[in-house]
Length: 98
Image 1: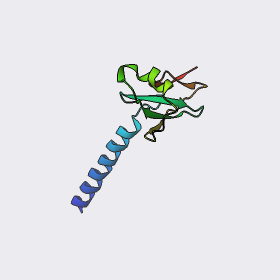
Image 2: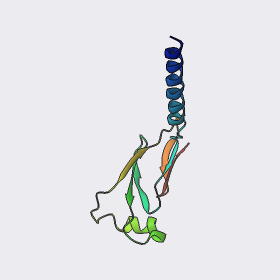
Image 3: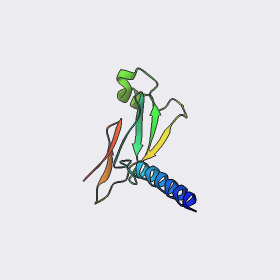
């Protein structure tokens, strides 16, 4: 019986550790990977990262100029703003601001 209790405790500790890592994610800010840009952010905090189709050093300006080119690759993510803050972005990063 002691082995079963020890196994249950080990499983519970593992689950608690995994939940702690998952819950530790800071969802009040986000960023797109290099070579990708933020394609707008909704008032609810949802945003999509899309690839830059030109030169990486001109990624934000290039992305704005090339929005009409069809490329369906994207990464969706979200940020959670609290206390009356609203989501903002600068083309690469997303954050909450009052």
